[in-house]
Structure formats: C-alpha cells, structure tokens
Image (cartoon, rainbow, N blue to C red; front, side, top):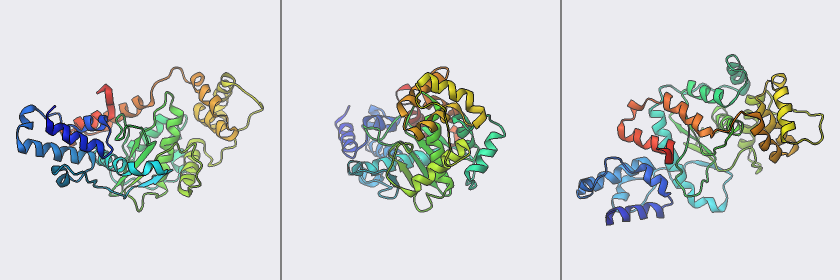
Length: 330
C-alpha cells in the first residue's frame, strides 16, 4: 500500500467510515499504474466520493465533506450517535440512489395497510417476509440488506431513502428467521405510505422499532401500520388460555392458530410476545416454528439480485453494490 493510499484511508477512517465500507467502495480498476498517475489518484477520489456520499473537491485536498449533511431524519438518536449521523446518511443515500437507478418504476401509489394486506392475501397465504419483499419490488421500491456498514459498529436498524417521489429500503438488521425482519420491513413501508419522508431525503431507524419506547409519534404510526399489514389490526388482540408457556408450547399453539387468525406463525408468536412481554420465549419459539434457520439477508438480497437491472448501473457501480450486498461473501 502506497503512502498516498494510507493517507486517504486514514482520512476516511477519521471521518467515521469502517474499513469494510472503504474496502467495498474501493474501485476494482485501481492498480499500481493508476496510483503512479495524478489523474488516476484524482479519479480514485472521485469514485470514492460518489460511492460514500462525499463532496469530491474537498476530498482531492484530503479533506472530508459530506454531501447530505444534517438532511436525513434519525429516529431513536442518542448522544453517542450524533457524530455518526452524516456518515450513515451519506453512505445510505448513495446506496439508495444506486438502487433506484437500477430499478424500473415510478412513484409508488399511497396505499393504506388494509388495502395492501388485501392485495397480498389474494396471492399469498399470509403477509410474510417473502410476500412483503415481492410487494415492495412490485411497487418499484427496491429492498436490500446491507452486508457492509459505513461504521465499525452496526448502528442502523433500517433506512428509507427518498429520491424524486421514489423510495429504497435498506435493512441493517439480520436474523435467522423471517418474522422479525418482516416486522422491520413492514414498519419501514409504513414510513413511506404514511408520508413520513415528505420533508426529508432519508429516514434512519437506529434501533429496533419493535422494542423502542421513546414516544415518537411517527414511530408509533409506523408500528400500527406494520401490525395492521401483518395481522389485519393495528392493535391485534392475541389471546391464549395458558398463563405460562415455554418455547415448544408456544410454537405448537401458533402453528395451530395461524390460519384462524390469518397471521404467519412467527409473526403471531411475536405479537403475543409484545402483549405479554415474553420476548425470550417467543424468540426461542421461532426455531420450533421454522424448519431450519437461514439468515434473512440471503432471501432479501437473493431476490434483489434477480430484480435489479445491473446493466443500468455499469460494471463499476454494479461491483460496488454487490460488495455492499455480499460483504465477506463477495
């Protein structure tokens, strides 16, 4: 690694970017010959600026300046998060714009949770993760899971990016079972349909919306939208005749009751957990509900791989996006 590369990487690291994000954004065409050329070193900086959401001219002088500074809206922001906001927003908004460039479509129509649920149930047994992902893509709304994060610590649960009336959803949280990710995706879809990005180019959920309790009205609205979409009611009343239950008992009960309630079994277990504050039991029950664990990111990004118009991105942008979607598996 040359002294110039080391200096550039150090400046990016000082700005808050993780090594993984810098590595993913580093162009595939970079060689020792390019490093020996002033024009090559300049093009490297322009490429990194485009991909990480930075102003290119300051970067030529080794100064970091973010494109989207203080424009995104953050949910569940704590004091220790404040210094990370601009790196998160700029990285996510750059990725969102790439996704929309590679996704044919127009602005998604505003649809309430009940209408969306009815439309999904006409072709699916339940409103589950697979159905939600398919619905987003059908609406021209790309969804991916970030396997590379802009920060060393994963401090983003999910993010919605808005560009000229269109939206892209970036999931940060992963899970071995689909139900928790289905709620997150339904919640982010709620932000879109409820108009929560009307005056902001992006909205970032830093914490799990299912667990956050900070009195944010928009978060409460998005939760209610998600519950109505997944269960048919913004306040689902899930009852059990058992005062106490363990994970196998809960799994057996929700599998038996899923068709009666019209709710995917994993989501049904999580609804009961929410009502009874029984999260450990419900999360343990998921392994009895599903046949085998599989990281949700594989389904999310597997669908995205087939939906994205990679030719619309070109080789270098496509290479970068695949790095972000695959991480260490790239």
